[in-house]
Length: 316
Image 1 (cartoon, rainbow, N blue to C red):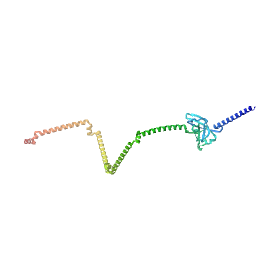
Image 2: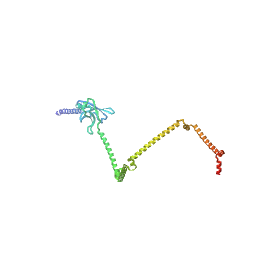
Image 3: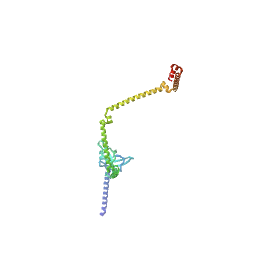
Image 4: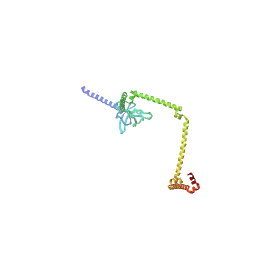
């Protein structure tokens, strides 16, 4: 009889314990989700939430103060994240507080981190927008580190190949390190340069002392005076030549545009023909005068009065 009475008691205790555990679990989960405390809402926009989902934690200076209530896509480049924040920390969240997406530990879940603002900006209001900042992603850092490591390996491989070529004497650098002929040639070139510098120093010394034509040209003022005089004389000759050229230009212009005899002789064809005819006639007249003078000389009347015949006979 007692055995049948103990069964309802055990069943009642089991149900009571289960109900208590259920209430405690609901209370625990509700406290984590801020279901049983006063909250206010803030939002922020991100380009990439990097796996953030509803229910992830919101932390303020490392302390859990709320949860992510919703994650909505507004456009192809904007994602809105709404957060429920505990009323107790309202006065510490400023209007210029910055929001970024972080991670719990190295491989933990995503969370939202609110950075403190300045007291001068004032306390944030309910449903107000906070500015977001781009967080440093560990995955991106790892990928960049891998790229750097790969580049370092390639660089090390190239340096190793270069060092092997240098040790084998390949290339100009290898020859410069492993051979002595290049050093000898460089020494000879240095000696030649030193000798050239010495000769140049001697030449400059001679020039400074006024030796040779170049030294006289540099140090003797008389040569400079003579050169200056010659240049001035050349300038005068050039000016005179310019004046003669101008006079010839004026003469040619007057010849081309004037109406004198010379212009007519040059450009008047009829005048030129008349002059030619006159010259021919003058030549013919001169020939006739010469012939007449010869006839007069040979005439007997002139011989009679001049006694030329007598002289010729006496000469015979």
